[in-house]
Image (cartoon, rainbow, N blue to C red; front, top):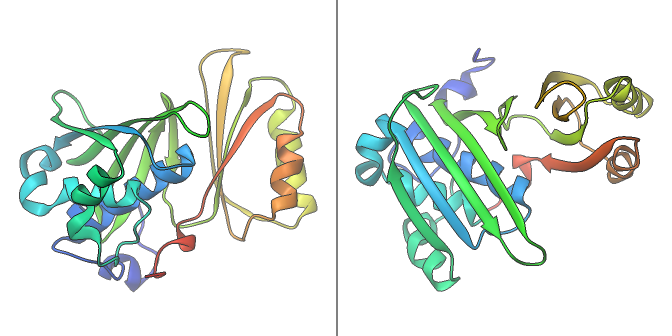
Length: 230
């Protein structure tokens, strides 16, 4: 990731001790929570690399759970996140993963919730320094999602013209695309398109995208809704 300003290096306002091991971990949890749409009932949290070796000492386990609970990086409740999760009945399981991982600070989240409807999410995220993150996999689709910009995550069928229809809707709303990633399970199979946008996402635009042919579901990620709110 290219650092585009000095604030990308300094990192966000946060509860420490480490921008990469705590602030970044909180933001990965926040992205996962927003994609799931609710606080998970169950969370399997698998740490890789440096995360696996130091997650308890650096509080990375507490940080990820804080994000899953919707806490911002500077939320004073972060040190009590595990106790709060237990009070809410969230079932947590922490593991040290082995094998290949995309970055020394990698975590895989396997989440599920039953209310208001059954939902599941698998996500792999990396904390790349200064509180910056990259989500590299969502539900086994390869993606790139930084959490820096308002983001649309669109599940759809791999059909001709779907991407053109989506970008036309954004053009008509004068919403600029900063970055786009697309992955599919196979030719004519399920696909996932991630659009990082320069501006806010109007609710009406989400409704139009949801109504587009072959679109199955639209998810949104906007960390500005939580960061700096405490």
